[in-house]
Amino acid sequence: MKRAVVILCAVLLLSACAGDRPTNLGVINGNLAACPDSPNCVSSQASDERHRIEPFATGDDPEAAFTRLVEIIRSRSDATVIDSTGTYLRVELRTTLFTDDAEFLLDRESRLVELRSASRLGYSDLGLNRRRIEEIRRQLQGRE
Image: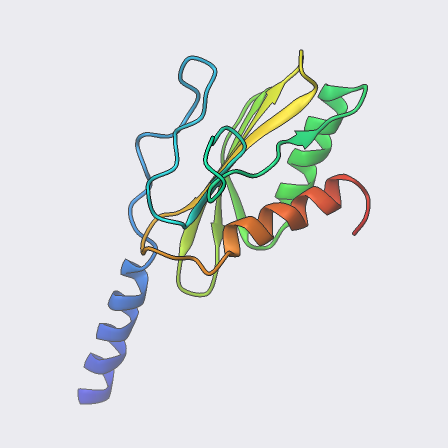
């Protein structure tokens, strides 16, 4: 009985690491939400170097590139699509203990996909969001 209580407590504690789904995400006036002050977020729309990451280039066919991005995300075992339209994609990305939120926004005119990826909890993510986005970029470019 004591062991069952310990296991239950551990499961409840670990499930709390997922955090609540943010309510401030989505496209507002053509922009994604700003990153918080903590270093556990990257955004192609950020102006500061700590949070800034380059958007994805789509080449001559933005719609095809965005469709490919959606396919890449859907094929990932760590990803759950929360919202998907022809120009916006919102996903939850999981690690063993934590859940991160990522958004991708197609800008057809500039032929770019603006993006944001942030941890729900904690202060530092030890660069995980940046590494994950760069991994997705390599897949989108056909280099992985």
